[in-house]
Amino acid sequence: MFKSRWVRLWVVASIVWLVGVGAAAAYYVWGRDACFTFETVSIADDSTPQDKTLAESIKNELTTKVLCGTASTSRF
Image (cartoon, rainbow, N blue to C red):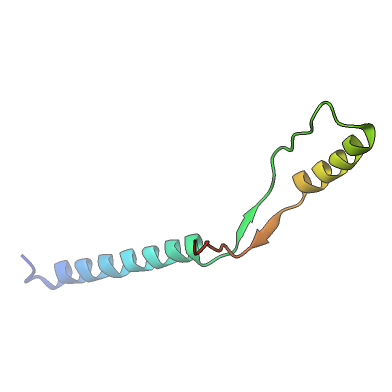
């Protein structure tokens, strides 16, 4: 079956392509910084007006900012 040069070329080209796609996917998943943003932030209803004002400003900052950094795991 593998005596034909075209079949061998097709097999080698397919393997090279699969390794390339795998390497690109691995870089995309593990090689880049993790970025996230907060979708919602809850504020307690029984907060004082000052606390609500502070919480609203924090909420506005967190929901508009994109946070990026390298992902790290805990040793424990």
